[in-house]
Amino acid sequence: MSRTRTALLAAMALVAGATGTAFAVDAADVAAVPCTVDYKIQNQWSTGFTAAVTITNNSAAKSSWSLKWSYAGNQKVTSGWNAKLSQSGAAVTAANETYNAQLATGGSVSFGFQGSYSGSNAVPATFTLDGVTCNVDGGPGGPTDPPDPGGPSNRVDNPYSGAKMYVNPEWSANAAAEPGGSRIANQPTGVWLDRIAAINGAGGKMGLRAHLDEALRQKGSGELVVQFVIYNLPGRDCSALASNGELKADEIGRYKTDYIDPIKAILADPKYASLRIVTTVEIDSLPNLVTNTGSRPTAVPQCDVMKDNGNYVKGVGYALNKLGDVPNVYNYVDAGHHGWIGWDDNFGPTATIMKEAATAEGATVNDVHGFITNTANYSALKENNFTINDTVAGKSVRESKWVDWNRYLDELSYAQAFRNQLVSVGFNSNIGMLIDTSRNGWGGAARPTGPGATTSVDTYVDGGRYDRRFNAGNWCNQSGAGLGERPQAAPAAGIDAYVWMKPPGESDGSSKAIPNDEGKGFDRMCDPTYTGNPRNNNNMSGALPDAPVSGHWFSAQFRQLMQNAYPPLS
Image 1 (cartoon, rainbow, N blue to C red):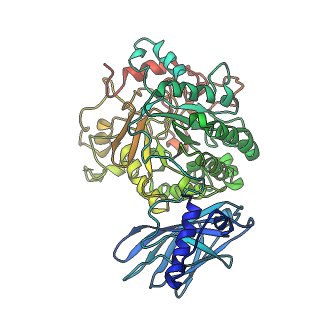
Image 2 (tube, one colour):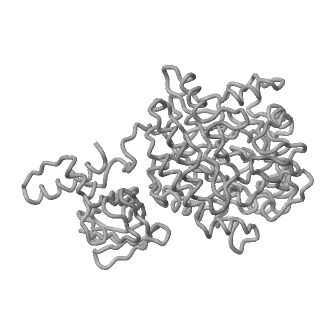
C-alpha cells in the first residue's frame, strides 16, 4: 500500500471513529488529498521526546510554507531543526527556513524537534498546511514504518547482510598483475563515477551499464551488492586540488541533467532490479562547508563560494532525491572521518548540514539509508594501545599533539558516535554506517604492540598509535599505510559493513603537476616535500613520491599496502 493511501485511510479512520460513519476509499480519493503529514516520535523518555515530521505537498507548488497543529496534552516544543518552530499554548507553528522554502507539487520536506511532556504524548489529530487540512499518517505512538515519498521499496535493513559483493574486473586485473596481488584480487571495491564520461565508459574503461551487467553475471541465484561512488559535484573538492572536478562552481544544472539524471535512468532499469545497489554520495563535500569556510584558519576561498551558492547542498539533495526513488538503491552519504570531524566545533554542525542537504531539492531523510566514514582515507579502525580517558604524566591523552583535543581516537568510535548524532538531528534511527578500511591497516614491522613510554603524554601516544601519519589531516598517498580489514557485513554495532570503497592501488593525486583531460589538478599535499598548511597543523605531507593523477594505478603504493596489511596477508 502506498504511503499516501495509508495516510488517507488513517485520517478517515479518525473521522469514522468520531462519527460512526464508514468511508470507502479508492485511488481517486487519494489523488484529491492536498497534502499528507507523517509525524513520527523517534525517541521518548519519561519527560521528553524527539519527533520527525515529513510534509508531502500534493497541490500547487509553494514558495513558502507553514504547518500548524495543536496538542491534546501538555507537550512543549523546546528546540528544532530545519524549520522555524513557535508555540502558543497548545498550538504549534512550523515555518520554512530560507533554504527549504520551495515545496514542489509532489515534493516533500522534513524537519524535526525536541519536546517535553508529562502524562500522555499522543500524535496530533489534525495538521494544516497554509490553512488547508492535511491527512495524518499515524496512530498511537506515531507510524510504525518510515515514509517513502519515492514509492514502494524492497530495501532490506542492511544490504550487505547475506549478500556477495561485486568484484570490479578492471581493478581485479590490475591487482592480479602485481607480485602477490592475486591474494586480494578477488576483493570487492567501489566503482568511481567521477565525471560524466565515466557513465558510458571513458578511456576504454567499463561504463555504468557494463558494471551492472557484470554484476548480474556475478550474482547468480543469490544476493549481490554493487557499490558506486557518486562524485562530480559542481566545484568539487573545494579544499584540495588533486581531485577537482570537471564542473564549475555554478554548473548545478549540468550536474542534475548530464550526470545524476542519466545515472538514475540506468539504475532504474528493471533489468537491474534484483541487485542491491549501494551509492556513496559525494565524498568530502558537505564537511568542507563546516571546517573550511568563514574566519577559520583552515578556510579556503573556493569553499566559501560553494557555501554561499548552496550548490553542494543542492547537489547532494538532488542526488539523494533522484537515486532514492529507485527501490533497490541504498544511498550512503559521506561523513568525513574522525581526524576531520571529531572535534566539538565540527561534530554537531556537520550532522546539521547533512540534515539540511538530505531535505533539499525534494529529498527527505528516508532517501538516506546510512553514512560512510573514512572514504579514501587512512584513519585507523581501532586504536587498542590507549584510550581517550588515559592520563599520563598529569596530562590527558586529549592534550597530546597527535590527538589535539579530538574526542575520538579512531574510526570505529567516531562512526558509532556520529551515527547517534545523526539520529539526534532527525535521521531515521535504523541508519547504518559503512567504514572504508581499504588503506587503514597500518601493519608491518612498525606496528606497535603496546603503548609508548609514560615519560610524557606524547611519547605514550606516539609510541602506541597504529596510525603513523605525521598528522591525521594528511590524506594523500600516505607512506607506511597498509590494507585494512577485509570487506565484511555487520562487523560491529551500528556498522552495516567494512568496505573497500577506495580501490587500493588507485592514486589520491599526483606528486607533481601532470596535464590531464579529467579536470584534476595538483595539490601540494601530494608532494612529499610539502611542509603543510593549517589543515594538517603545518606538518610534512607524508605522501609517497612519483604518484600519478588521482584514480590512476599506482603500483608502488599497492605493493606497500600489501606489505603493511593488517590483518596480514597470507
